[in-house]
Image (cartoon, rainbow, N blue to C red; front, side, top):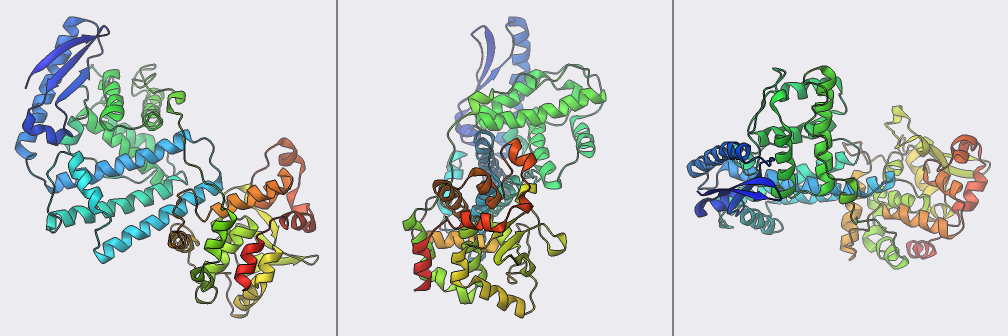
Length: 526
């Protein structure tokens, strides 16, 4: 192995050459570069020697244990896939700007569908759809391809499907602000390729970083799964250090090396790098406040990329076209659900005509269908006794039932459910981790694909985008649209002076009726 010391733009860099036979174990890298963070030649030489020793230890480990695919390698492959996929998704969240409750619910519905597809593949032992990804994982790690008929390849495919399920579940929770899931930290061979620093300074405190993290989350507890997600990345930071150490010994060089690993080795986007460094910085800020490290010694300060650097285009949801609405709601598969599975029939139609969120429709109780002054309406509520919840305070509202739903026989359906003694409007739906409506969301996603709509911008939640867009086009005032959709008031006028519960239902109904899908009604009544 050759080593070199370079001076580039006045800063010294260390370069280590990787023996050819070990390169496949380091994603094909032929060299490891490391910024030494100094312009002083003597200091650079000392740091380079320390870095060289770390690389030598890495290569010894790889020579002993890295020549064949082991269970640990398999776990490392899928762990890298999981992390990379999560970071790409987090990139989107960090740069897309404000995301409405409706958009979040849409994304969660898609994730639920994908989770079910992965589960079906596991149950049926059908790996055809995952084989290509498994081959790409092996190739990206420089590992030889495996016999598709062999047990090793089958185990890799099954493990990848399991991790995909983890990913879909984690992402579902992240859209609710829940970052608590912990995925396994890779073995030392993975962290060593990240280019981390071994420079040390004398610490001011004997507490190790992991101890401080435990104390931090004990005092600043959030949702269990939210904390666990942050802890998972902090574990990876510890791995990048080469192991746990006293917090006072962690230097800016260590944190810069971690940042470089995020950007260059793990190839994460600027927005995700910002997020990880921000979480890490919070630990050091808290440590300063607790006296675990001296004040103004936060080694992460100033390392994060600017938010401007993280800004890029993001995928948006779009409304249905008239043609697409007829493809879906006019499909025979949809129509037959009216008798065989009424929740699949009525819940999407409620989302379409009432511009409700999916879960608002799924959690409705029979008692939530009421009437006032001859106007039937839905009561969107958060009655805990009925297992209901709301996204925000603005979601609590009364929404007149659209005449098209009445024409299609919705009130008769409700009366039949009530006569049968059921409390919930859709008694076949039970509350799971993802709410009541998740099974319908998954099914609707499959229905879209079955009728030829595979645009990722079109999902069940697109019915809400469609309705709000068409209400706007029909001239419905913004404050009325906000009330119908359950959005928080945009201005002080609506926030302070408009008492939504006192607005006449007739006013809301007249505006909601401007939402027309005559082609859908005609198709369903044929």
